[in-house]
Amino acid sequence: SRVRFSLYLQPVEQKQTANVLGVLPGADENRKDKALVIGAHLDHIGTDPDGVVYNGANDDGWGVSALIEIAMLMKQQNVKPLNTIVFAAFSAEEEGLVGSEYYVRNPPKFGPRDTVAMLQLDGFGTHDPAGVFISEENFALFTRVKAAAERLGVRQIFEPNIRGGSDQQSFQARGAPAVMIAWADPNSFIHLPIDDVNHINLRLLKDAGMTAYLTALEIAVGK
Image (cartoon, rainbow, N blue to C red; front, top):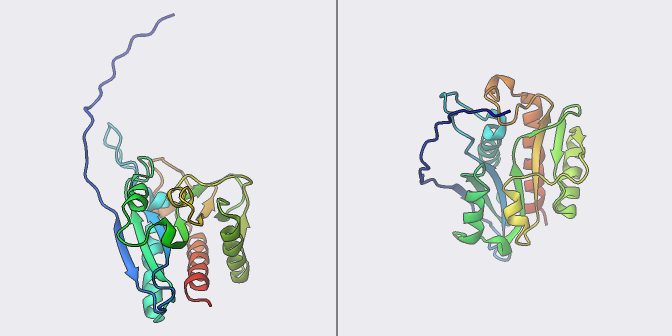
C-alpha cells in the first residue's frame, strides 16, 4: 500500500550564539597556567513546529544552575585555587557539541593541553533507582569523582560502558581528562516537553552539585 502526505518544512536558518565563561584565577605561580574546567550547556532543543516549548530543566538547566552555585559558593568561602578554574556554559551542545568544540579549537587561553581536568554537569535518564551518575571516559578522573561522592555519602548509579554524550567529549578527544557528572532520575524526561522545573529532584541536584564542588576543590586547591 502507498500513503501520501504533505510536510511543511521551514528553511534552514543560521543563528549566532556564544559560550559564556567565568574565570577564577589560580594563586600558585607554578599552577595558574593549568586550568580545571567545570562545564554545562545552556541550550536545549527550543520549540516544535506547533510552538510547544522544550524547557530542558534537567537537560541542562540544572547543570547551568549548579555551575553558578558552585562559583558563588567558592566566592562565599573565599576559595583561592592553585590552578585556575574556568566556569564554562557552552552553547549549541544539542547541535553536536558545537560550543565546546569551538572552545577547544579556539581557546581564549586554556586549551585542552592546559586543562588538568574537565567536569561536565548534564542531565541523564536511567531506569535504575535514582542517584548520581559519573561517566567513564577517563578512569583516573572517574575514580576521583567517585571517591568524592563516597565521602559525601552520595548514592551513585553505574551504567557500564556509558560515556555520556556531552561537552566533556570535546575535551577527552583531545587528551584532557574529562567526565560527566549527572543526577540520574528515572523520570528525567530527556528531550520531552515535560522536562520542566517541577520535575526537578532538589536532593539529587544538590548531591550531584556537591560532588562536583568537592572534586573541584580537591583538584584545583589540593596539593
